[in-house]
Amino acid sequence: MTISTISSPFSGARIVVTGGAGFLGRIVVEKLRQRGAGEILVPRRKQFDLTHESDVARMYAQMRPDVVFHLAAEVGGIGANMRNPGRYFFANMAMALHLIEHARQAGLGKFVQVGTICAYPKMTPVPFHENDLWNGYPEETNAPYGIAKKAAMVMLDGYQRQYGLKSTYVLPVNLYGPGDNFDANTSHVIPALIKKCVEAVDASSGHIDCWGTGSASREFLYVDDAAEGVIRAAEVLDTPEPINLGSGREILIRDLVALIAKLSGFKGEIRWDASRPDGQPRRCLDVSRAASLLGWSAKVEFEMGLTKTIDWYRSNRQG
Image (spheres, rainbow, N blue to C red):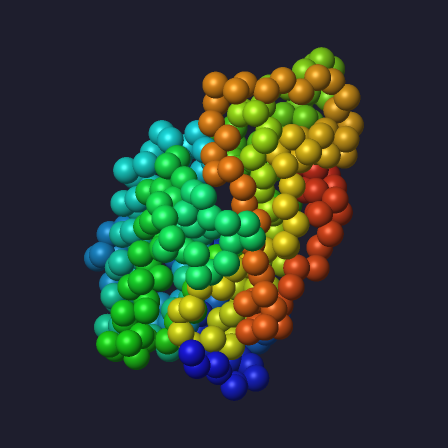
């Protein structure tokens, strides 16, 4: 493992942020600006389809980055993963494959890869430690996506050892916060539940329907905390050891639903559809590596983050 000693590695740097207009990306871009980045460029899909190698090559030639933050992904909740396993594997694998190879060809200064907690084995002991990443197969509904993201870590490790490409690799747990994806077909659990509860309140509905049994557990990280962790890892690490980014708080889905219902003012019945999958049984991360190597920890308290997210959705849902 090597650790950078430069105090302001992004000062004056030319940085490409794939997915920089997205949920996490917008905040990463803003934090990079605050750190004095020279120029931040965000490739948009209309100009650069990063699943196509020719577009990736053209992006490197035109944008000439010193650093690439690869945040772009094709992903969704359990339902979307079940409907699109082939597409999610291909799109995420193709983007990483082409971006990393052309980083090597371009002599890139550093490549920053955001992975996924879906890469962990289905029955990983809780809390998840980075050393457990290879101790089994991921949960079936999101395995294609998770494996594609994990393969990018293997590629970066190989490229660091053979070609000297500097990189870092972080594994954020489930993110949430203002600006999240609230689309009914592709959203993750927190925005999906907020949407259900707020709309039920507005419609004076007596119940909401939720997938599964509520017995699975999850951990969530506020998006601003995640952005800070991603950038901090990029600032100090030059090799792609996996680094968990999480809050360290585990919550049962049934308790999460009850909490979101309370914060959104929904007082009706919560109905569970046990014919729908729960997904991975438990998720909670060991974040000691992030604390020791990055000096990073989550700052935003969960209920406060949920309240901010609910308020944002109420104010912005018409758009």
